[in-house]
Length: 135
Image 1 (cartoon, helix red, strand yellow):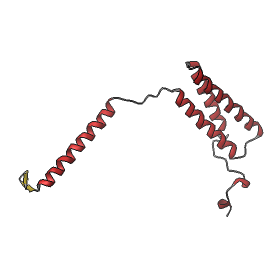
Image 2: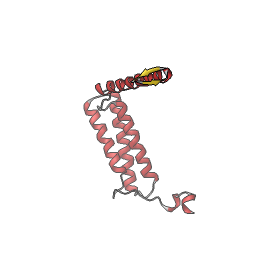
Image 3: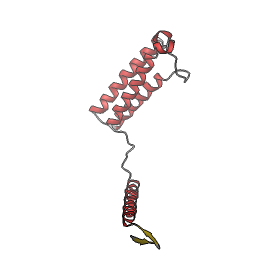
Image 4: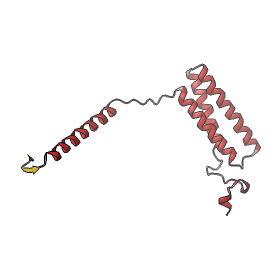
């Protein structure tokens, strides 16, 4: 047994508390190092642009599948989706600031076209509801 602060403490408990303190100190040091040097860049890259397009494309698909879209709006979504795809492909093949801006703008327009007109989610028509919802 060892004496820690005037108390009789088993040697095993002392070793455990020292290991715990060492691990806690190491973890704090690692976390402090992460805070000291930022690694994440917020500048868009071609990869983030492709990801953004894929997300916007998925939103457009969801809007079409939800039903209730007029033929005119459907045509608008298809045209904007195609324009966004071409703009992203242009940026991928010929990277430049102007192509990046054009691709971002095309993606933003596609997202704006997929949002419900009144800002609320649309209810799917009765024929597209699942069997569990009709019971």
